[in-house]
Every structure is written in structure tokens, then in C-alpha cells.
Length: 279
Image (cartoon, rainbow, N blue to C red; front, side, top):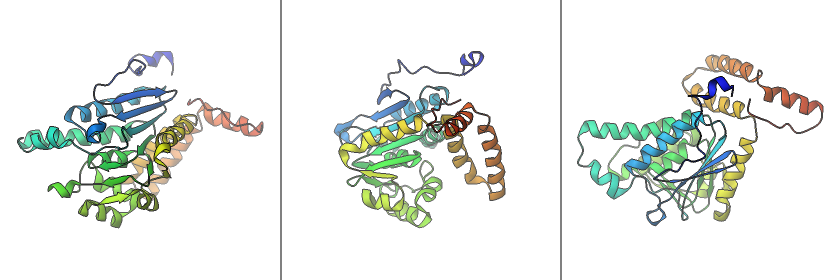
């Protein structure tokens, strides 16, 4: 980034220590670990907000080029903590309830808005808001023993939580999304892979390494191009085909101005593998 733009437009996470989950930077890959394994890594009011704020910051962290989200102890995330979230929600006023549901939705908005590809490394329980975090990720690596469940109707709520009715049908199709959102049933790993919810199916001991390897491969690629791909995948949901084609023409022309595009051409001519730098 040009030195004139650094101030106010970059955030340094080298000393970042979150209070409610783990964070580790492996080169250009950031690894988020939901780390309450004794309760299958549930979310709290505080962890929702801190995750939202981190994903917002990632828009300004150019040295982190891909993200992996995992859970500790053989499970991904069991959703909102029954005692720390569900109980208090039953006593809140409507304005406070709306503030909460908007905050949880803002986490998904932040995940979709950050330029880095987000990879969920899913093992074991992946339920409720945990299933939403997996859904909101760009790619998902899972295991045969993973169980993904959108549990909202099981607790008397609607299946339309945190963007589920908009995003999930685009991943697995309207009929399959309806099945999951109406029934709240668990989607096993092999079925999730056959449906296209999981992009990779691996052994439990390989799930994090596979997620990090995939993230590293993306981080070593044209990160500006990946950010543009993510933006267009999200933006074109509300477009007609003609609008989408025009938007992609503009996006691709912008990418053709990058140095990575020129590096790729010169590497091809020299019969070498391009080394991308993200500019």
C-alpha cells in the first residue's frame, strides 16, 4: 500500500490478543479458534461482538490474506450458549432483542464484507450460530463425523436467522435448505459433502491442516483477484444476468491493471510459476 494511505487504512494484528477466542497468524493466514471445548465452543454476547469487530478490522489488514475458523476439542461450535445467551434473551424487551439479533447478523455481514477468503474447518458439532458461521464462510472443510444443524425451529424460533434463508439455498439449493431450516435436523459430513455444503471431506486429524493448506494456497495467489471474486460472488446475488456480466467486465478490467496480472503473463512466457504479491 502507498505510504500516503497507510495511516488510517491499515491495522496491525501482530500483537492482537482477543479475550473470547483464540487468534494465531501463520504467515499470511489468520486462524480463529473458538475455544470453550468443555461446552463444545458456544458463543456468548461478548464473543459475537468480538468476532464481528475482528472481521471488520480484517478489511484493513493487508498482511492477512486468508482466514481459517476452527473449534477446539473435536467440535466446531454448538451455537449460542444456552445459559449465557438463551436464558437472558427470554427476559429482554423487544428493543434489546432486536439489538441482539442485529448484532449477530452483523457478524455475518462482516464475514461477507472482509476481502479475505474465510475457510471453516468443521469437526463434530456445528449447530445453530455455529452452522451459520460455517455457512457464511467462503469454503468449508469437514469430517464424516461432523454434524451441522440449523436448530432454530427446535427452540421455537424461525429458521430465518442471520441470513440463513438467503445464503443457505445458494449453497445447497432451495429444497435442501428448506429441509434443514424447517426440521433442524443434523446434516452428517458425508451428506454435507454430497450436497456441496462441504468443499472437502477429510479425516478428523486432517481437518485443520487441510483448512490451513487451502488458506495458504489462496494466500499465495492473487489476493486482489480473490477479494474481487468474493465481492462479485456476494454482490451479484441481487443482480440480473446482464447487470452481472457488465459488473464482471468492470471488475476484470480493474484486475487487468494489477501487477499480479502482469506477473502471471511474464511467468507464463518464461514457463515459470507466477509469484503473486497482491498488488
